[in-house]
Length: 230
Image 1: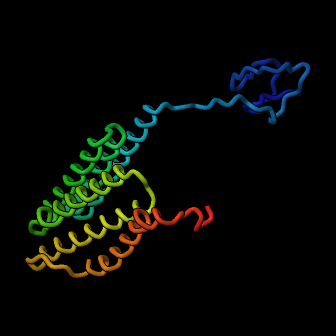
Image 2: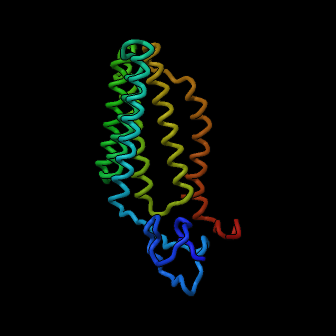
Image 3: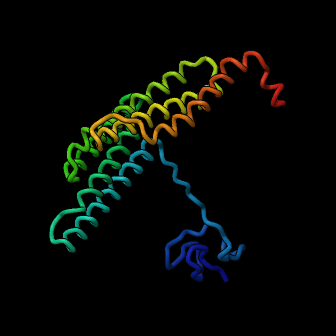
């Protein structure tokens, strides 16, 4: 008794009467069973196709989330209120995904930054806080971008890379926290003051200087490979 390996129906010839599967084996000599394996076709996507799938998926979920929020907001509040915030965020995420996939180099970074600033600006319009974008969002985003570019530029220009990389990163974080602290204090109290960032500065500066000392001075005098047996 022979069976179709695809659907399990009893067959008498080389074509299944139920699913029309063409049987490659000789049913008169080799009995069929469900253990017969079918040919597996593996689909390979190109890089362009993968990007299109990722981008389309992000857009789909952004539209889905926006639709759910709009429906819920309109159903419970009979108007559009809080749904604006998630819509702005998911739309920005979808746009940033597109830029990340299809734009390269410096333009990618600038595009992501501009989209992020646009998101903050739109949120500022709907959040009842005076000048939040101009006094908080824009300065912090700008300083973060400048410091990040400087740190990356210095690291790339370094001939020898080692302990100097975390040292430069910690210096950048120190300057960033000081800047954020002063911006926030100016927004709250109307003056530039250093408060909580003093703690991070006192903590990170010695570590950063120590790492730079090891990389540029100590390593020139002592063979670290022998010290650490590497």
